[in-house]
Length: 122
Image (cartoon, rainbow, N blue to C red; front, side, top):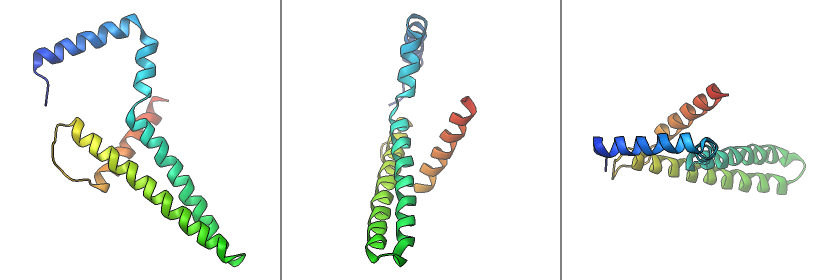
């Protein structure tokens, strides 16, 4: 449910006063968001997927490497999908859209935009 203009002004006033009183708290809270946590998990999932792919290519040495690599790729893909889906749901909630479905394309677009913004701030 969107805020009324009066509520929005009150919220902005509270944020401004908090930023003036304790800027380090505001900085630390802004970094520790759900999206940042999800992005970190997605990066780990992608690294696991890559490691699984490398193990899969080692089927020449042993079939067990290939099986282990496939399982690691499968689990990593599920982790990435889970956190992309969670980011999509959180994004829908934050925009006030109650129902709706998950769109991988939209989630990837938001992820790319966040990565661009974070690299621009550095």
